Image (cartoon, rainbow, N blue to C red; front, side, top):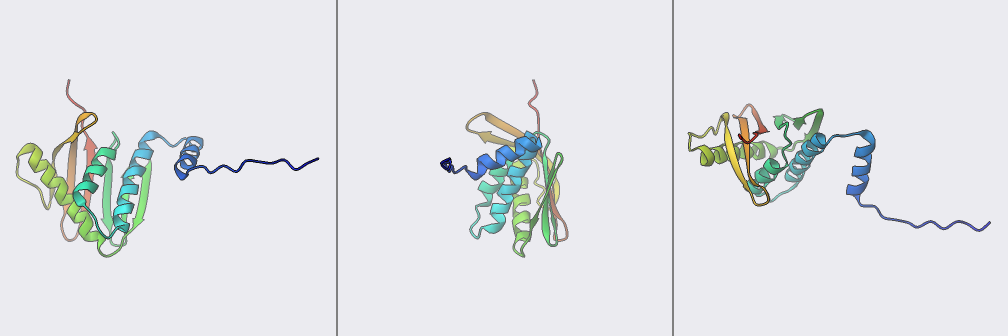
Length: 159
């Protein structure tokens, strides 16, 4: 019997991951939190970071259930519905998370006109999205030298 020839097919990494997620039953919410974690991982690995763009990407990828990012001495922890991912921190990442918290505070100031919460607090953000109008978010941050975290929760539009 002659040897059977098989086609070698290259399957993209994204397609393989999607197939694995389907087999494991990983929900859309978990994938959205994972997308936020991927954005943060790319930010941590990059030397030249546009923090305005990073925060905007995080906001547009935030799932309906929200996302929380906390910095610990040696890692960042990203949490959402049934999802937790730890990212290895390097010394310069402290400043990155503080910049993200400050950017969220400035966006809230631009949206509401209320006093900013640069060192911690909460507020609302209205982000214009070219595809679907506007996205509204409620954000909470802590941005002190000893503690840094942010939590973003999308808000439902009122009818």
